[in-house]
Image (tube, rainbow, N blue to C red; front, side):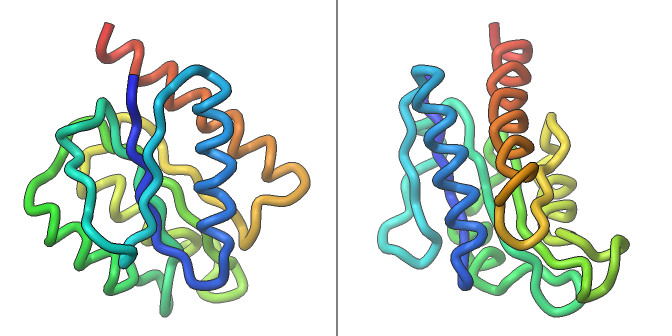
Length: 145
């Protein structure tokens, strides 16, 4: 199995989640390529079994422009897209918390609920990232084996 992790991060929170996901997947013997949006030539999602897309939520529930640009640059909707996001409930409350991740998961018809992390993945949220990552593996295997 090979998974592509793609993410956008300004404060480092989404990057930190992406790194934890990568560590979990590698520990489960999955080949992982990680790409920070805006960091050069975009890897082709067709070269991977699944794509994990991470985004922070911006301005009252918006998806950041760089993530929208990435989606447009890829030019098609890959299969097996799993979405994770970071957000802050103090900006818009629960209704807009990690809304970018929710919208991306809906757009890609993700087969698994998006991961939503409040700011950075510390404490109990670290376990949430690990469990979500393992759930993605189980989901992918159930759909593809």
